[in-house]
Structures are given as C-alpha cells and as structure tokens.
Image 1 (cartoon, rainbow, N blue to C red):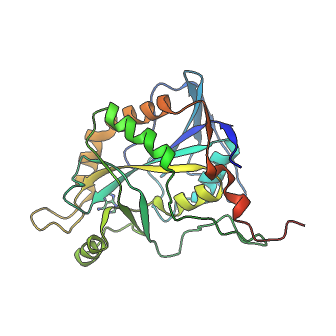
Image 2 (cartoon, helix red, strand yellow):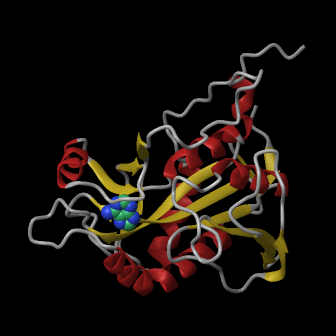
Image 3 (tube, rainbow, N blue to C red):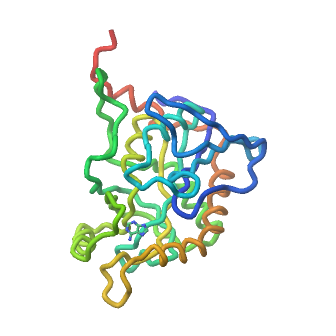
Length: 272
Ligand code: ADE
C-alpha cells in the first residue's frame, strides 16, 4: 500500500547549477552519514511554506569528478533530512539531432556504462535487497518537470535513454557512434549510481538534463570541450533556475508514490 507523505523536494545541481534563488529561512546543513561526507553542505529552507533542499553534486568550486562524488553520502543525507523527491539537474551531450545544444531533456531510461568503481548500493554487509529498476525515473515527478519546462517556454525533449559513462574524459568517436546505435539520446557522467541509490532509499527521482554539445559524433561540429560546455551552460543557468522553482511551485504539498514502498518488495534477508 502506497503511503501519503509530506512532500520535500530536493535539487541536486550539476555543472553550472550551484545554488537556487529565493529560499527563505535558509540553513546550511552539515550532515554526516555512515558512508562519509556529502559533496557539500546541504542548503535547506522553504519557499511559500513548502520545504526545499539543494546540494551541489560536485561540491563548492566543482571539486569532485563524477567518479569521486560520494553518491551514497549525498542520497543518505537527503533521506536523513526527510527528502521525498529529487530532481537531478545535469549537463549532458546530445546524441541525436533532436537533442541539440540548448535543449532541456527529460530522459525516461538509463544505459549504465560506468565501470564499477563507484559505490552503487546501500545493500550488502548482511542485508540483501534487489529493487525494481525497470523504469529508473519517477513518471509522476517527470510530469512536474515537463510542465515546468513548458511554463518556462524552454525547448524540451521528453523520453529516450541517457547513457552514463565513467568519465572524466569525454567519449571517443567510435563510442559516441555506438551509443547512437543503441538509440541513446543524451550522454552524461552522473546519473548512475545516483538514480539507483535514490530508488533504494525510496525517494522519487528524475533527471532534468541540459544539452551543452553534440559530443563528437557529428562530423560538421567540433568535438566537445569544457569551454563549449561552459559557454552553453552559462546561457542556460537562468532557465534551469526558473524551471527548478516552477517544479517546486507545482508539486503538491502531500504526495503518494509507489516508490515510497520500494523496500517492502526488495529485501530478501530474514527480518529476525
Ligand atoms: N556533459 C556535457 N557534455 C557531455 C558529453 N559530451 N559527454 C559526457 N558528459 C557530458
């Protein structure tokens, strides 16, 4: 049975999104977890009486590579605060013509190409669980993101797969073409294991990705560089903040979600 919870929406900001405006009763929470320290202090507060939290994924000054981010500590700390929903904001490359630089993308699937160096589960050490992950993103939360993009009149693509690579290097041309053959629409470095840990923590999670480049598959376009990524991000940062605030405004004060009961069907270990 799906339980009703008071909504607590958090944003994990990626490259280019390091804060959110308009947060009232703002606090900076330093949270310790059994998995270590989160990427940064978590900003908490409220807007119009509704709680909101913000965590910059790469830490202040962008200090952690995608492989170095302590995803378990980040998700654990947000859970400890009582967060029920996470919108993960990230910069990505576009793998299809339709996901051109400047487009906001709400992917519906993930292809995980990370290499196993990232800690990717809260299970283990005596507790065995296998969560359902056929649909890695929360469809309910995606509706609020999609509506917010529409309200803010941002060119948006809904659906398709995000391929998550280990990085920190960008892809080779052969890799980029092979991801296109797999029909992925965007490429990033941080969706995994963030999405799986959110699911294990029974937090509704969805990604709002901003396309900054065409990776390196497109012959007539220069291969991606950090310079190009930063230039497009700079142009999109205001839009990403407006969309974030709009999602927060649209999400109801209370929510019911099957993801809140994930563990009920996942844990195999004897409870006694
Ligand atoms: N982030 C932004 N652009 C990217 C790309 N082309 N590949 C991986 N991550 C990215």
